[in-house]
Length: 77
Image (cartoon, rainbow, N blue to C red):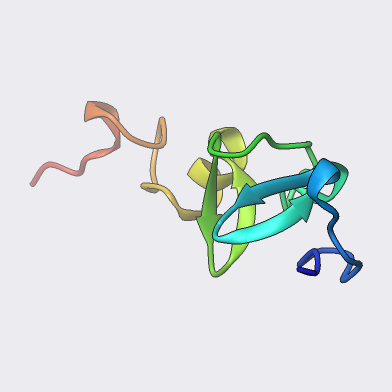
């Protein structure tokens, strides 16, 4: 029986959500920063931890600068 990476308890088939190559309990699959509940496939991963795409993953690991991406974030010399 697989164990949930968050709570380390056994994950039964009826309560299983598969994401990041692991089986999770649905309530355990949450953003590591803001604690928002995530659905499988609609989030990002960094070092094995799930993050919501926006704003957490974008703010922490995305492009830096004004607007966090797009034309306004580039530095022109």
